[in-house]
Length: 83
Image (cartoon, rainbow, N blue to C red):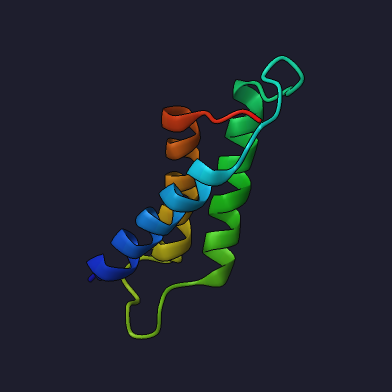
């Protein structure tokens, strides 16, 4: 069974952290769609290596880390701050 607490906390923390990241001049950043795909794949591999929270053995990923990664990427698309 997946506990909803770490998922919600990771998502909220990821949105807060992602909204505070400044990207600088948008034309200077070279993040394309392939860069985001690589970041998501690397984050999922890291969440898989972290493993599940003790006693939650139904889902082999760290749900808090995966939801924090989703929160960071989601807030970068929504808020898109520049310096």
